Length: 392
Image (cartoon, rainbow, N blue to C red):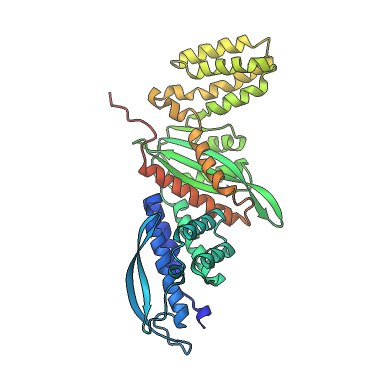
């Protein structure tokens, strides 16, 4: 029967859409919409005919008769559609009959397919809302499998030389064995010799324990990561241990922004907070390493009696934020904090918070990978992250 037709074209549909969006970003949305509608119309015609293309079926009621071009005006621009025809002429795609609800349907499709984690049920609902008919769970699962294969290729692709690396993690709520748990989402960003930025990888782990961070870093290394001059991150205990194990000779820059935040926990009086923040800022903004060290010694002594815990903390921690002085001053504001990774995490959070709780780990990894891939493509097409420095 028509309702049981297994359309193999659905398998390539997600791949084509993904390729368009990855290669062209937001500018590729009209083309992605053309692919969705053209494929949807083909499927709807097959269901109307009662048979797939070239299929011999007792249920066939008519025959395909080519395509007729149609230009559709939408808020996203003009779409070039190929409207399927049948011999007796009594077929016309339902969404065109309903007066072009393209923008709303497309936004709904993108929102649900990406924001809800591309679960089988969600994708079925999207296609039903957009096209007016249901697809089988098998068809959706095959499309999801293809999507996962594309994402896996990206996460395991060969990488190369990146001089500056940013590492961070955040947590997402995921259902696991009947309970809701917080899983750690790791991310790595690299800066090339030419100053461009690129997301190197993502991973979903049980926690930020050293064993999980080490596995993540070792995979980056096995994929060809080399040439690192500096690693910037916050002071995650597991990450710190793993970094020393996998990249023992690479200098580490502890995020100055987080150091400022951490320092406030050791300030005994509220009225002192602004002064302490200004003093630490003066250290970070010193003209060179020698001046930064001098100001650090002065402040350690300054707070020795009025805020002894702060003084001890500064002596033990602030120096970890001064590694940046060994690198070009023009790069300082870009590599002295982990803001680049923090902004990526905000983009992830903005999308994943609409999901709330992921149904499983695969769903979480799928959506996070999609978000990070999109952001990385945006970076590669945009301006350089580090300024060019003329050779002396």
